[in-house]
Image (cartoon, rainbow, N blue to C red; front, side, top):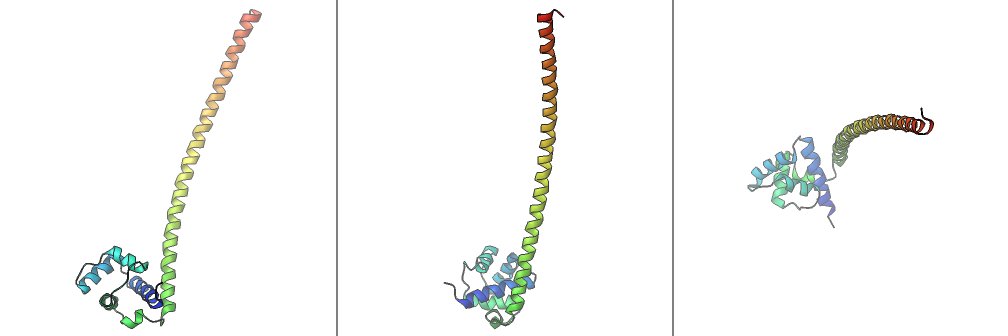
Length: 148
């Protein structure tokens, strides 16, 4: 089970990263410079999803890169603001996903409408051909049976 201080650290780290306007990749690049070894964007993702722990030296470097005291990443002080930032980030993600979904629905509606038009045109053509065939059959019958 993850310790509450780890959960707090990760949440505050992510909120401060977002507040600083840093992408995960840019944050990883700056963190790599600070710790002296490569930390890539996927490592930051794993940290933020609590799938990778943070070493003490990394924690100090994270606070330094974010320009906050290490204690600020370990306390509930300001957690309301951090939670608000998290909610804003989640809202922005959800709105972006909704926009993509709306565009996809619109595109698919155009495909459905086009297929309906094609089907209606084919049905009309089939009806016309059916009437012509029935008229030919009636003419053949009249000629064969009535001599007309």
